[in-house]
Length: 136
Image 1 (spheres, rainbow, N blue to C red):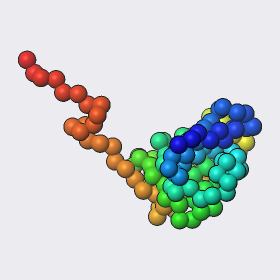
Image 2 (image 1 turned 120 degrees about the vertical axis):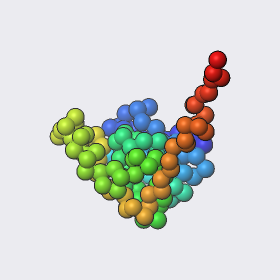
Image 3 (image 1 turned 90 degrees about the vertical axis):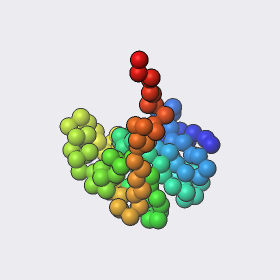
């Protein structure tokens, strides 16, 4: 396990991508993808795991799948539609970042539905965060 500093906008220690057993966790923005690929030695990752779909965590995902078309992407079921069709996500982000979108995040490429693997959250009854208290 290691963290890869993707050097967002050329700055160290801003965005990191974790490599765990050959899988990438949150690869970061496409604008930093060359740094990530260089750190990987050009080797194809086993999979991409996304904690969430914010651009600083997931914007390189589609471009990585374009590079390696059989790459599987694991994401929460709520994030999957935005990977497949990022238009709503981009419309929202463009209101915030305007003309800086490309410079900050790079090209946002849709991910083919066949590459997207979803995970549902645990039910509240089995969630480690749920607590039960005896009734008095």
